[in-house]
Amino acid sequence: MNPTRTTELDEHEGGDAVAAARDARRAHPDAEFRAGGIDTTSRQVLNRASGPFVDLADIADLRGLHPPRDGQPAWVGATTTLAELHSDPHIRTSYPGLAAAVAEIATPEVRSRATIGGNLLQRNRCPYYRSPDFDCHQTGADQCPAHEAGAASSLLVNLGPCVAPHPSTIALALLAHDATVLVDPEGERSVPELLGDGTDPTHDHQLAAHEILTGVRLPAPPAQECAAYHRLTRRSTAEWPLVETLVRLGIPAPADQEGTRPRAPATIRWARVAVGGVARVPLRLRSVEDALLDRPASAETVQAAAGLAGTTDTPCQTLVRASVLEALERAMGEHPHS
Ligand SMILES: Cc1cc2nc3c(=O)[nH]c(=O)nc-3n(C[C@H](O)[C@H](O)[C@H](O)COP(=O)(O)OP(=O)(O)OC[C@H]3O[C@@H](n4cnc5c(N)ncnc54)[C@H](O)[C@@H]3O)c2cc1C
Ligand code: SF4
Image (cartoon, rainbow, N blue to C red; front, side):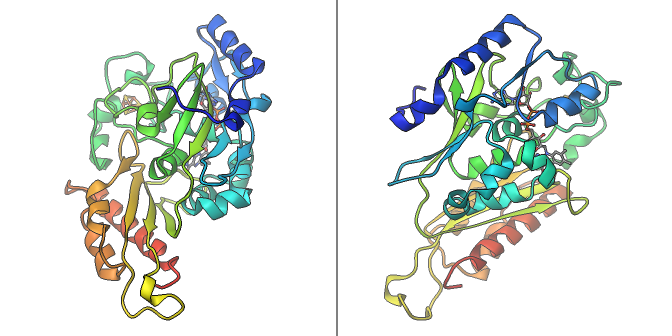
């Protein structure tokens, strides 16, 4: 799909350095791009990445942030760090759910190096993939030791032969924001297009080896949004979550209640509910979203909606429902009339 690009975005998508990086990657079939180097370095230690590496971190055209203006989308360069993303006042104000999610990724040290592009394209956390003692679909073999060990039971939905949950918190957040990614040499893709449908056991994303993710486009923020992020972890910090939820709710103030305490709950006019850590790709929970639409913004509504998260009777479903309920309650708590 060819995007209609604004002049402002075009300034950030071309550039000789990006083409040079692409050519360098093409010239070395075994090469791998490297941005902040957090994931590539951790895999290098395990012989799951050998280089050579084509460094992207210093390419000026890939870095920076343009806030949304006059109803236009925001642009975030692929090598913008998570710390830069989180400290930007426009991101905090316009995309509070994204800002809340970024704040909980890893540690301040990791966030100061990790990039938004690298986070989206990081490889999965499966212990079999991360161990040099095993081979699997992701390393060229036709087997999945994790599947054989029963790892599928920790998923909300089993989408295919690889059962490693997608590791990216940013992917979850961008899915919930209907964001797209911009790709060199050409193209704009949704998060589902970037990551695929979860049935490919050989890759964690669908970007071709020579393609460079140049940036992220976030739709102009809607008015009167309440958002929250919640994660369940084994320990309190510096760990990928067991389950994570991002909720965005559109709850306009009732017109007849302006300036007064509301006599009745406001109404939820739109909803985005996405979960991560429980499937090969982050998931939108459409049944939960539908159960919120045009319903009163009340405790009863969110409890009933959260109860619809997941259809499989597994321990994972219990965790997902708890996380969705917590995120919904936090989002409602952000509403000025709650
Ligand atoms: C203790 C700890 C806790 C963590 N917790 C979380 C968590 O809760 N949630 C979460 O999401 N992450 C978590 N992480 C992972 C961390 O956020 C990622 O490793 C980091 O964001 C990767 O970004 P990077 O820029 O360092 O990527 P790199 O390591 O440089 O690259 C990662 C991959 O992306 C490719 N790549 C990078 N940029 C581009 C580009 N522009 N175009 C094409 N390919 C590209 C590289 O080739 C490589 O395959 C955690 C990490 C640690 C150490
Ligand atoms: S195929 Fe996926 S789930 Fe199976 S061992 Fe490899 S990375 Fe892990």
